[in-house]
Length: 259
Image 1 (tube, rainbow, N blue to C red):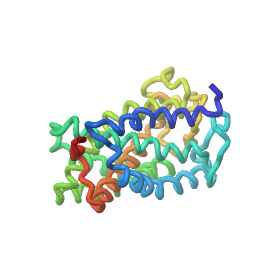
Image 2: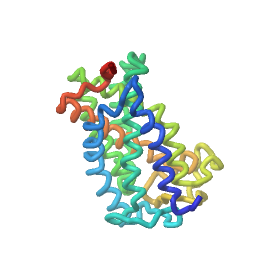
Image 3: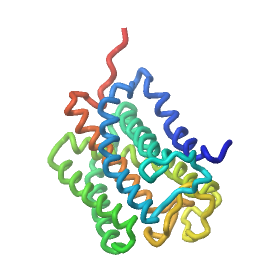
């Protein structure tokens, strides 16, 4: 494989299975595309300027040896696609689990979990206010979690989004760590699961300035990415549900029977 297409290959690999199964008769995720793509655009309206700004400041960056060479607004094409492929796979999983797990048993734990994440994010922001990546991610996560927990406590529909968000996020951690592991260290499995030797990580498609994060990794992936990933998924889920409601799309509903 040409190494210049490695990041692009990761993007497409993440998208391949969810896209292929978007047309299956049981869920027919394709029905919800009219809400999905505007929701992704809402998320990108925050994450793309953030990405551009942090790239310009050297808080993270990209190894051109693994890129196609196409850059848009200061970040590579592959990074733009990352913010389409990952959320697509996440919302596909979120929606599919509504069908396959109609009554998740830990429903009462969802609001406390969101509230605890808000507290943890607030503590991280206060403790590491001078480290731009974790501080920014934590502030945004805390704000989102507080808003979601308060809204979910008052609105039955939002309670459904909240516990469904956690139901999707937890199993998604495995493919998320694998895909981000490849991006942050091609042989990520060779590093310890809990890796404090951050300067020893090599062969990175996406590199990080460790002065701006927690300087601790899961394999090769900065642990900060867990908070970043939750924020990205949660923002897309909330936007998706609100836009679907506005359009009159009933998410989680079975598809119409085909004649």
